[in-house]
Length: 302
Image (tube, rainbow, N blue to C red; front, side, top):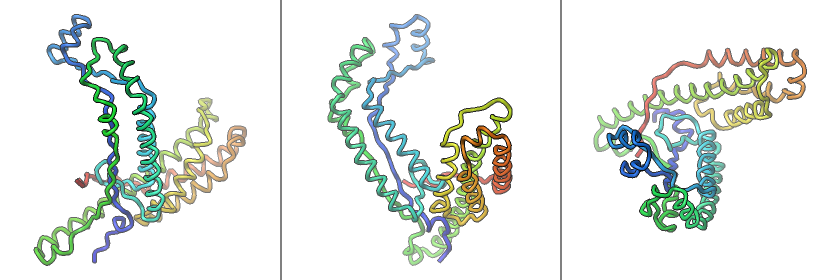
């Protein structure tokens, strides 16, 4: 059997997050109430406008939670060539993934129920605020709106069906070769993006420290240090699905540097900043040496 590398070390998980849309296009006829020039441009279809249907904190709470979930999914998967919404989840953290997903789904049910309770009053407020731009047909009943909020999760099996070898041997051989080429391409993509993530984190800390020395001091947060530790831990624990030894060595190095950082001492003493900057510069040089431009394309998984 062919070595599928990172593909065998991950599970493809499709997460589709659905929601009721809170914006609607303004019809050209409704723009006529504005300035003559704007109305004229709208009539020529040179200008389009949208309106926000509701000003509602409960709706925004749902969208904010969805955004945080998307960030978590990206951070706890590896950057594959799959289309958006399909994540390559490392086997090592599969239990954490399913636990988080279940908790997120439950939290979203509660948030949607809260939004459902205030939907009617928010709709009345919109009628007052939008005035002539308000159209009742833009606002389904609360139950229909709530039904628009759901999450679809599918776990996908990737590979070449074994029975194809019996039915069409030549097609099976060709499909296997294509899969292996895709796996190799995916490996280069994963490693390149992971290196880019590390470069960004290290550069952010490096730039903050430099700011204290050249008089352009920027905000220095604990997160500048903590994010390096968290990224390194997760990479070393689970995200190194390609066996990228070079990046693993860098992850160990920058984690050790971050753990040794004392924020107050760094702000106060230039010689300590210089020592840390020297370590970070060495890590950046190694990272840039590891990075190579690779062609990428999306793998469509319907």
